[in-house]
Length: 229
Figure 1: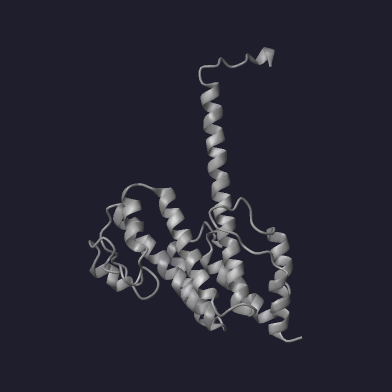
Figure 2 (figure 1 turned 45 degrees about the vertical axis):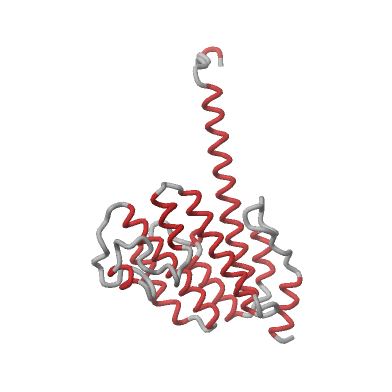
């Protein structure tokens, strides 16, 4: 069986993604997705696993420093054999570098002094135009002015929604011309990761809201004495 036939069968067996922000759960479980992805050949499976590890927050080691993450990206991305995967990894990490710059500036920090402080094409542009609202990158990165504005307003949820929507729409544009090939598998898996991230975030907010309601309901209620419990 050729790769094109194998991946056509794989993608045909995967349930379609709905709209990102109306989703309440992923279209299939993580276990079922990983089972489906066993149909990838060894090289493509390794490429997808490496790509997801590099760009998805859920895959990051919370104990790794930013510098360690950057060094791993610089080391691993050029080794990816698939050009589509390399380009996508570059785009996502450049986006993350710009968000990092916005957050550093929002905290009142000066322009980065480290020579290799970020990833990709825009590090020197950001350093030169640190005090410009969008680092003079409005045309190259149309999402950046809104991200800067929402961050300055303290709208964390708005920033999160904007970034998720930007990545989702980018993947949708890339999907044109890729329907039953490895690139289509990459797009599906990364969109699944976005849905998982959003629904997990939504669930966490719901739990926090429930906790707030419980605390409000119990406010002023005398604790039950231990002898009566």
